[in-house]
Image 1 (cartoon, rainbow, N blue to C red):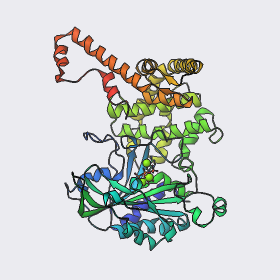
Image 2 (cartoon, rainbow, N blue to C red):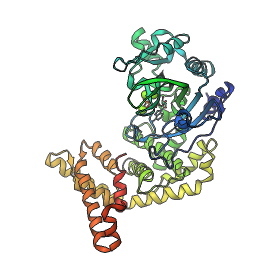
Image 3 (cartoon, helix red, strand yellow):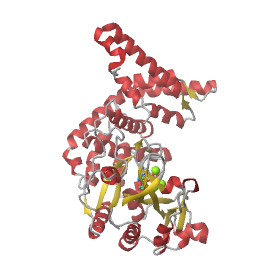
Image 4 (tube, rainbow, N blue to C red):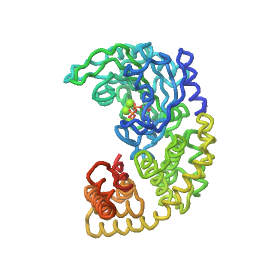
Length: 477
Ligand code: ATP
Ligand code: MG
Ligand code: MG
Ligand code: MG
């Protein structure tokens, strides 16, 4: 059985053998781009090449990119831990062609790598092609279907809709159809029971998307019309942890050697055993997932804070701490102690983890301790409010209470919502926002009374209204 390290390397070796230049991962935290806080796909670092603003150093490129999907268009946070194949941070393996090869070779390479090199059974693979979209005058991607048919039985080529199978960078710019590769992880026994046509079902929960091949062939203009892209681009992304799951014969990313050492370490620390209680399992998965995100964010220079990207990281850390508190009975800082385990498994591919170990541990430990100081009181308050709500027969926690948890006890809104959801309740978000606004106004008024300078600021030249307001600006990401 191949290890995760060998799998990552085999991908890079394969594409190097096809003339690709292997490049390093870009940072996961993006500085100085107002449109994107975190790298969420391999193509991000090549945006300027794809837009034609920069000349590529090589026309064929491949890499493994650290990605984070917790904000904006891609936000998988609520899935994490509850399913077994969406992470906050994950590695995306990718290959690109900037005006070099196109559909035919991209499809042939993907197939050769999965089936000839990795020996995945073709019998378990399904692919999708864009079905077309009449309203927009877009044809079905018969071209891709034709190339796939050279490798895979026609009944395993499934039509996909605009949402899943047509990729656009934004309202304008490069775009085009894509083909996804899905792998069927159902057991042989289960598959035997289902015959012929019914077997091919990419929407079955145990059939998982592993690779997306994007064929950028159009340019969308401001008035909405499409023209041909002069230099066509291949942009692919494969979920590394999912690939490991498929190759190691597992049903869950957390059962691979990418996550098992972390799961075991969390088990040892908490005296809990993975696989016996669903709530405990979710907590262990969330913590194993979140520690990676937090550690990698810190190596990219992003410390937890009260604003923007820093607040995203703080929210993720507090979420993990609370899972540990509630379901693993942890009463003191423990996440920081997972660092040696994380370094064991990822330190070779990402030496920055090793280099910054002491800093990462210190930052995480301090964050954990600071949140733990108010967590217990906050949870008690919330439990009491939930009881009261249930007695009253309401399913809503008031804006005032939600805001108190946020402001006094450091509970990010999404954390309060998560706890409420576990009990069948929800937060009054409008009420919460109103409280936040009141606090901003109070801060403004207080400032206005105090000094002349602040009166100047009041007139609207500068927007600074305190850290709480900054937090408010990025609370729902
Ligand atoms: P899904 O439909 O499973 O959410 P996606 O279509 O959003 O995936 P893409 O944007 O096509 O994903 O990204 C390329 C590949 O990255 C996917 O085929 C998948 O293998 C992987 N991937 C996407 N999101 C995640 C995630 N949150 N955690 C782990 N792997 C992911
Ligand atoms: Mg997705
Ligand atoms: Mg998808
Ligand atoms: Mg996809």
